Length: 367
Image 1: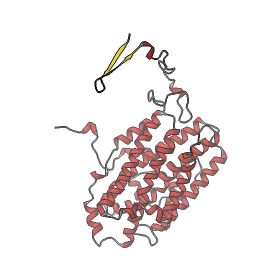
Image 2: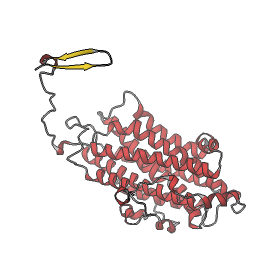
Image 3: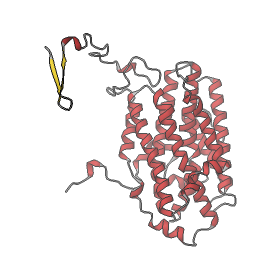
Image 4: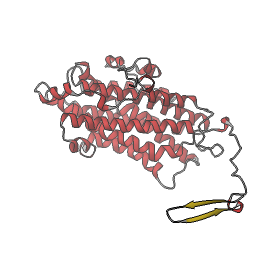
């Protein structure tokens, strides 16, 4: 049977004949995929566009957690912060700590987002993991929005804050460390099909999930939340709590992805690669300690730069344990009050308490 399409704009007709239709069906039509054939990377047998049935339920759970914890910076009131910032109640040292950490976070979130969308996403061949990566990328955009909102609210020099990653050596060194991990994966000829390529990809994941989001962010979290703990800069503090909650999910997803790739590729996690990852994390710890010392040359109420050597070591040990590597520092947490926000020993229980209650779509009432 023939059919005719008429286009009134051009007063033309096109007749479709039986010969116009495809004579054979694509090979994927009518074929259900085997869920057991799904793989996190290097999967050629399962269509990455087909989400269900799920194989990696942990990825879907992280996605649902992220959706349930949705927030927007503009919902957080900044009136008290503005009043305090305009007053003379903050010392120059306190203002410097706030500005320095805003400067680091402002571009660090963009680095993570770019790595997700340009380097990680295309090499992850599983639909449920890609679903979470899209959610995470959106959350990174929200975090960058938050730091712009803070700058705008406090009438800060936005150019100076967002350019600190070029001008402040302790920030630049951390960002350059991360960007080196992205360079290989961004190369046009990069592939995870070779053992060397898969090693580099796993190194990238450890660099961004374990180091950037799992270590490099935590000194800044502690410094900014210390103001909130003293009932100062509460708008910034509330947003940092939300960001910390999001980053906990990012870290948990990343570690599940890393451990999953290791499990599916038994020969990948060699003693040589493990040794390199330990050394990479140790280098990152020294960069983070140097950053804390730069932020706190004379200390502040409640802590000093020396305590951050123990704190960063404590954080790094928790990360090492979760990817199956031996601890390196054996230090204790010098800031036990941070456990009020997040218990680093039980990160998967973080969502049992919410920082502030938000309505999700199912709770809204329409007039």
